[in-house]
Length: 131
Image (cartoon, rainbow, N blue to C red; front, side, top):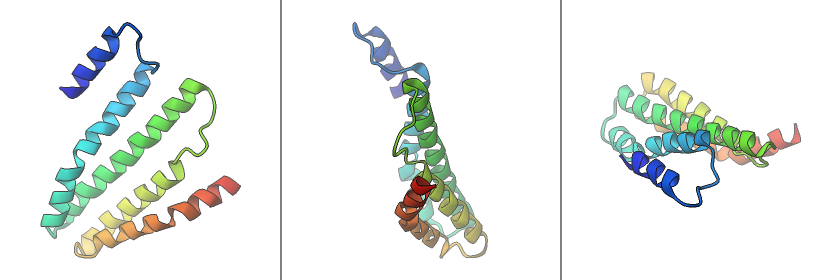
């Protein structure tokens, strides 16, 4: 509902916002997964079961993918590369979520420790900037 109101408001302004439709939809899809964060955090915190870890991990992966999609749409719209884009950090987050979900099969109690891998994000970003 909020997305409908926001899109309608953006269309009816005298001076429309300087954003493409693809940007608006990619941002709205990202915000949808942001709104699911409290739910997925509660599920992961309350239940020591693999499916709870999967709910949280899936949400983190979808958040990262939509954030990457936003950067790609921006780059397409401005016709130049974003520096920094944040994509290496998002890839580390995806990797840590997948690792957490895999650990959750065997040890749901320790699965969330995989997110400590995100502490390596600055190193990964520096390494990708050099390459």
